[in-house]
Length: 137
Image 1 (cartoon, one colour):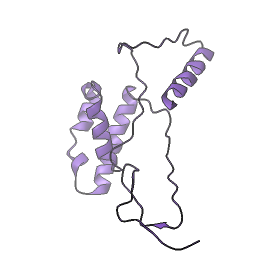
Image 2 (cartoon, helix red, strand yellow):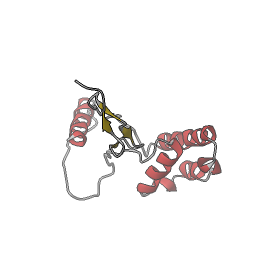
Image 3 (tube, helix red, strand yellow):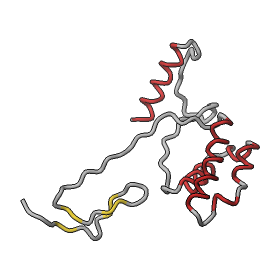
């Protein structure tokens, strides 16, 4: 699983820097850190960040994050205005050190060249409702 591979790689890097002496996997949720595999539910940066913060308990309690969350521009009708507010929120999350992005994994969807009308939903799921076979071999 990707999450396990990333955790193992982090453990190797931390051991090499003599920062981490022992890694143990436990079922208890008492860890100080959490490795999260997360896919934004929207391509809109402001909505995606709002969703992420809403799903993670404790992030909104950080003062800088709380201030950024209170920005009404996050729900503005203008895309550029929402993006500017999302960048402020993202910066607050990064500077708080509560969130550390490690990697971005993109999924690739390949479709037969003769299958036409395939639409990708915002979260990457292919929709075949209006697809049809065209062309020929």
